[in-house]
Image (cartoon, rainbow, N blue to C red; front, side, top):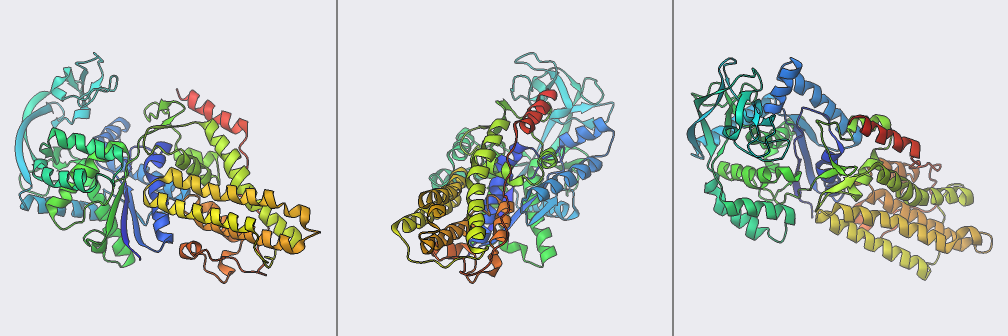
Length: 563
């Protein structure tokens, strides 16, 4: 039975390109899930967009002597194009600087304001007299009170990792003027998170205790056990969504408040372009809302945004938030400031037509339950030892044999032997396992099970050895090749969520649209033979190519050169 899903992927921040950590943690698993739900007949929208507000963008703009809009315009296009070339199948990729987002975020704030969900709090904050502006935490620099690092930010020390209050800094100074800031009173609106503590405890700690990932549940429980305090939803800044109430001049919505509303505004934008009703995907209780994020965003998507949705009253709350851990690179944490990263635009340039290789490696090694490590050597080994030698080898052998023995025409099958039935049984069990794993957000296991189908196919061919009996028992060989082509058709369908470019190639080789049986997931599960006898397929085509040591060394040298 078809269901409705709204799938969101964390909005990437537009102060730099996408790197492999982003892909492994958020965008690939979300894309796999969205593609899987589509081919299983569900009504799915996969939503994302650029997160374009906040302090880091204003800092970058000042450093480059540009406007914040110029900064986000540059990176928005870079990010959007990279996602497109990599095959991330968003139904809509929007941006938070758009008019529709500003209006949606403003309306959302006003609804909560009218509902009494905020409290006004006046406090003293650092102010730069020379610049005539309040200083966000990242615009304040001083000596860390814990480790003595003299260039600590107001909210966190980059040297020791300690979080603190700007007032805790020793000898604080403005990062804009370099002068010592003064303290000045300012009024802001705070979301009364404590009002939703009971709802969150019931929803997360009881209703979803056995359903959500342990890392997500554990972090939420820690926050709830500590008690929820009011959280500011506005700040003094000139870049962002203006606070839409009187007496709020020079104030904007805090980026953590307006960014998740970007999912809603992006859906609205998609609905307008496609003449759809956006409310179905956000206000229908039958819709399942799934957030894909990294672990650093758990609190915002499991505590704060659900509280916002609950406070508003008209929206569904998330069904699941399958957050991932972090991906490291060659044994060290990915660092954008140190350029210790594999950037997606550079990968696409260095490895043309190898999108699926990176998708596969980052999925089979995904940081689902703990931080994991990406190495270029493992990337090479996975490509050469699995994609080339297992999947690519099987498809190529079958298609080559079909051409050699039958002029690329699918032969007629005869009586099935026990070995044939066993191979089919094993393949069907792997299909069941893939579906089960994907429904439970276990993408590593699902990808491994998909590759197992190719392993089964290779073993079947090796055991049956059609090349040895083609002269003595040609009728038996027809059955072997037919079943091998059938397994190839299964791989064409099952590979689509994981390796969309490869799936398309296999379907093209096997002429998927010309067969009598529709190549669908339902027919796959019904154990029907998807291929038609006596139909001509296309010429063999290599799906993958080996990656040589020199190519890998070039990438390692590039990393080391940057550090």
